[in-house]
Image (cartoon, rainbow, N blue to C red; front, side, top):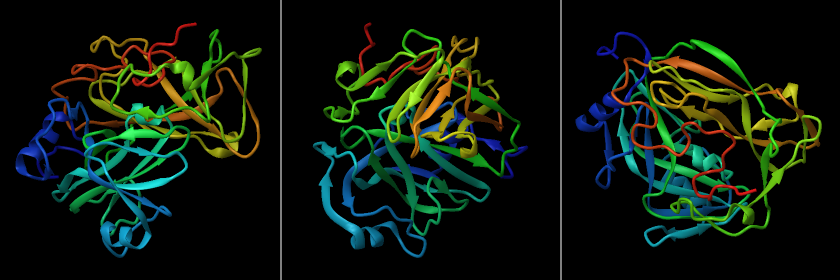
Length: 339
């Protein structure tokens, strides 16, 4: 961490320097938009395995554990359907050799969470999902578990992203995120027996085949157990250019539900400087074992802000974005909802 003045999230130029030094490598050429302002998109490689259970390798390599739990192998080069309710382990094209003082954490991309696909990074000898320890050298794998829709993926599909950190960045502040239930349509509920979502096909699916619109009553919405909902934050979200944020679930003691996927917010999201003022946070919500009445403005998540080591050379949306200036919005795979 000697080259950084203080702990923080690495901006895009530092990620690119790690790539140039070989600390982050790829089996194929890098895509021009793969490095985001404060994160790196990860891509599926050529193989995946249907496994009978999730696991952490802890005392061995991921490949060793796959040999013990694999049911069959899938070739992703021509595309493969991952069935909802099943668990898969996939190779990623990227591998790392992290320097001393640098660690990483992974999270689903926004588009992945919005179609209810649960993904987590696994490393050799790892004892925690999504965390890549300081000094780790080796391949990266991804656990993929579609929950509501079956999905079509292929080599190169991007389901998650990696955020790299120098040292242990301090928490600058934590903000509560409430839910907005004032609109004519307050959200969407996933249809259980829909077709397959092609995760590389943007604007290619009719949302009515996959989603049911929700109309609130008296500023309230009843969440059914086990169902998946897309909702929007009450307040606009703004990530200053020298900060990054992660959305985290609230304590379950305040409600029988959870924001299903944590999410990274890159610097510039929702800011005037990046032409995104007024952007809302989209919330992926699932109720637990009992029905729960959600009220307008009720806190459903927290945003945790951390500093960057330096200002990024580009901001969120500079390479194009489906979600800057968003309100209530389905993932990029679906056409705009027409009332």
